[in-house]
Amino acid sequence: MKKSLLHIQSSELDIEINSATAEALQFLVDTKLVAQTKSLDNVTLEEIFSLQVTQLGKATFKGSIDHAISCRLYEDLSQAKESLNLTSHLHLIYLVTPYDQAGVITPDWTIYFKQFCKLSDLEMKAAEIIGVPESYIGLKASGQTSRRKVCQTTLHRFYLALMLWQLWNQKSIWEVATNFSQTRGFLQNLLSQSASFASCVFHFCQELEDLWAYQDLLSNFVKKLAYCVTSELLPLMEVPGIKLARAKQLYAAGYQNVTLIAAADIPHLTACVPYLSKRSAKQIISAAKNVVEEKKAALLEEVETLVIVST
Image 1 (cartoon, one colour):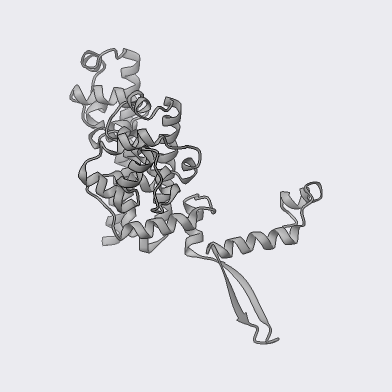
Image 2 (tube, one colour):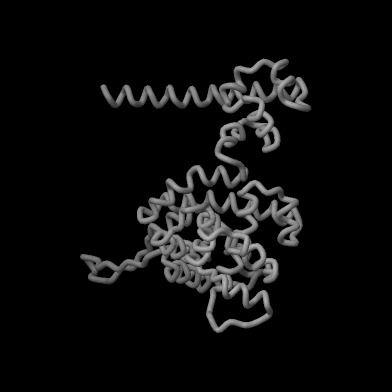
């Protein structure tokens, strides 16, 4: 700690280093990110205490998860895997809705109930499993109180998940903003943070064997959430410079994968895609060729590895 910035500024900040360090370490132990072990010295027969990073701590570090919520995240994921509803992506979207965003929004219960009622029966079942009962939201929307105890963080996160759910289903950001009386900037920020958090959760789960199922579920889901596009458009979105609107145009014009774009000629591409300049077409084709070459190199490397292993 003597080499840390905190130690240098301790006198100015009026902080006692030893007590601050002990408090921080105790927090890590309490949140199960660090485990305290005890052993006996064979020579002096004195007890030796040491600290060791737990698997949860390693997962928190790898996933860049805020240590204040890592324990809550692990509990939520562990609980959800026992009754994960996969009839739609709604449950997964809820699980990757950022916790910190739930604290900055106060639901409009009338809007909440109206949008909740638009869910299908299967989606409402997912909401019930998550812990968001329709009856509770209905009472809140009518200005009544409920004796039933419902986690407010869960309610707020699901309110945000409903916004993401509509974006996921290809509704425009303008339409969703109107539906929830939110600004487009708020929704864009929510989508960006959710995609980032989903990636963090994916890496978090990679370090925990008991959460193995999420590794397969989240691998493609993270990319799709980042763009909020259908799976058919995902390969096109991997090409630098191709956004959602352009990807839709290319797909409609018959360029349904990166290889086709890389093999295209500029005159034909500009003729098929509306409002595409020759300069933009040249850049898109060049970028697509780079993507194809990178994938080719990766496949060749994998083949060489397999040949070495087999011999």
